[in-house]
Length: 435
Image 1 (cartoon, rainbow, N blue to C red):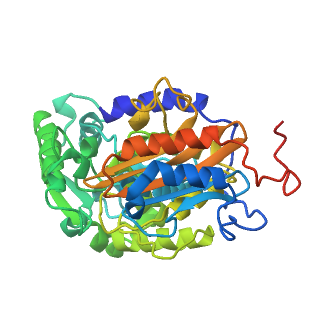
Image 2 (cartoon, one colour; image 1 turned 180 degrees about the horizontal axis):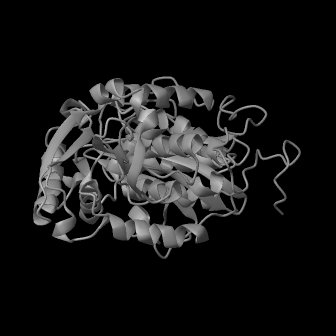
């Protein structure tokens, strides 16, 4: 299922960016535009502000909504500085962090290494699409067959093979609900994750599953194996020097970053978002990765009051974001040299991803690129809305609203209807060539 989704995203992705992203040898920093998002001085569009308040009605207390224009001006805002549980809107942060740090062509690697002392070891980086067939290739290469099924070529001596993995206590963020962990969307986060550690439900012991497949493959070839599961943290310390002399015998790469971003944002794939945050932070301890993400957010000039990062996917109810922070993040990323990849990773109203069934047949279809978020009692949508007066960066978070989907649709339509706000002044800043 994941492989099929990735194939579709790889085919579609080149058609999606609104402007071409230049080829880059290294991921660039965020462009530092003069000034920051202009969040002071109150909302600049009274008509839009009134439409916002009308849409949420008596439920204002449980809503946060912020709207920025293409200059970073705050057009309308309702409780925009109140930290709320963002659900999967957290992925907008994780994917922006990963794209900025790693670039669009980055691929997660799974490798079979031969160390200087002759030991063989499989190491991975959390490829969400790692398949059983690919793991079987590693077993075959470890046998010294290079893919051949000729039993005569199998050495009589048992294959000594180590498999490096995160310790069990790191497989789930500590505050993920126990009930969520048994479902496919709450599968454990490991470096070697066959089919993202999920079948119809979560694979609760991915290390044991991996061991069974490796053992079975080698035994089918008439070989023998001595398999040792080793702790990633301890192994890193033990091989810090010897890894430099290691030889890569076989490698399997993931889809490129731009496809992984789409899997995380368009399809809201939790496992992928978690891996991307960890790889961007160069830390698989979720607490260290969350701290690195927070520091990155600070460097982007986001409003940080009350923000809290607990995971990369938004499944943790300990996360806290504000609608202002998300709208500013969207605006900042629109200035990034890789902005097209970021926008292309999002779902599209009425057309694809988690927004495919929303706003069909309305003026929003094909004109809103966004990320949805859903937990019990939580609904969030943030993204980029095309209007007659240019893009708007909209973030909406509800924690306890009665019918949030309807309200969100009303707010997006109001943004299209109230296009040119009375307070807009063409002399303030050039409009990037728009008529």
